[in-house]
Image (cartoon, rainbow, N blue to C red; front, side):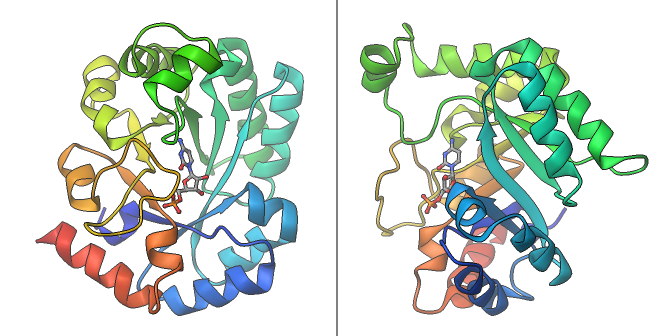
Length: 236
Ligand code: C5P
């Protein structure tokens, strides 16, 4: 896989037209985009097909977390849209993750298998928030490791985590267990609400399979130039 194919651009817009305009600017420079809650809920599922028609691979990031039967149904519906990657919260437990896998397989049909990824801890979550508000004791690293092992046991393809946790995930689950890492900020970029961050180059050095990057590219005056710069720095 080339560096370009390992960078997923988060199209966090409310309207299909805005997302497609940005995707248009990135055509040729980017190959993978992400449809998150803002765009999916605002524009509806048809935006996925429109991005696929433009030639992009699409990660639908809805972070499903529900009872096993509902998670299974959700994955079945998403698979039918032709998605390339989807995710569920590992906090939903093994039974839910296994049901999600089953639903995804049923919906995708023979010969096509989208990647199913488990969310560990959001990259906006700090140790303090996790301990004092979410109610999970121990370190973020311990929690990420626990969720990654659980996701692997449930048959998932990989996890979403901070690049900082990639070595730990690979150590615990093996090199072929995929890591998808948001919390990416090129040097000098606005950090915003992200907490556990690295630069794109550092994320690749740490072993991330895919990096997810939104605002530093989509909000740039020239998104294609921002993307090209990231590719150049990461290849260098
Ligand atoms: O704009 P920014 O680069 O912060 O975008 C990161 C994207 O990755 C957002 O769409 C966010 O929802 C998503 N994400 C994340 N942390 C996770 C999972 C997904 O930031 N653990």
